[in-house]
Image 1 (cartoon, rainbow, N blue to C red):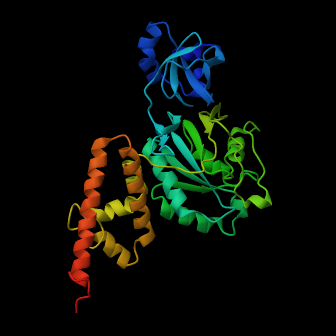
Image 2: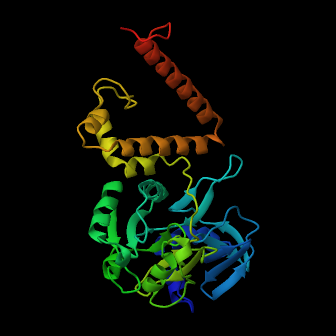
Length: 355
């Protein structure tokens, strides 16, 4: 049994385990106490401890976020425990650092509203972000009661996210909620765009109106407004905790190679059959990916999306990695030379098309 479990405020409700107690041993010997960060809003940090919630000074640590486990001395955070998992998106500009949305997450619920047409590009991007975090993604197709055929939507989402469980839900009526609850474990994060019904879904999971929600007007065409302005952590009735996040206007990927590979698992599998190990899946002989596209087994859009996310992820990571910037430059030069060779072969050196 952990140290906190015998206290007045049971930290195990917030995810404290015997493994964490072992990691914390040196801090406890130094007179520090464990706490979990439940809310970070404009520099203010709220934590929960064995003695209850309190405001904490986080100026001594870098990039604290909701879900972090911290070591406190009084009301000052002295250190953060290593993160098991973390949802990290790229900064919005070339000079901005990556942003950590939540830490120590077990399940990421990607909320996709069926009030509007499903966006394949956005879903693939969110799934890649979720896989890269180290947590397990689950897709909740919210507002399923507004869809003409939720089963068709489910099959479409499953094709875009191989290996990810997809659950159509209608939080207001309760449809699909039992299946969704069964798929959740540990610390759960709701992730999606504004108007996706995250807070409504969160309240249904919590069994009470804990999270603020906002109605979607007809003029907004189902897009909704930002009703959650910061991340906050709340215990779930059946165990585990829930983190609601603000609606994401955009999701940039940074060094998310593993997440992209898992999101496009069928392309990675096909690539293993290509004749050349370094196949770029363009015009190389013996390319299994291009063959699958030609035979209608793989949508060409999937390959285009795969390439786009890979480029974006590497470029974002290269902002702070000179070695990677050099590699990207070399790849660009190589690609331009290959295009030039192809054009010369097709049109000839004089620019006229060869007979």
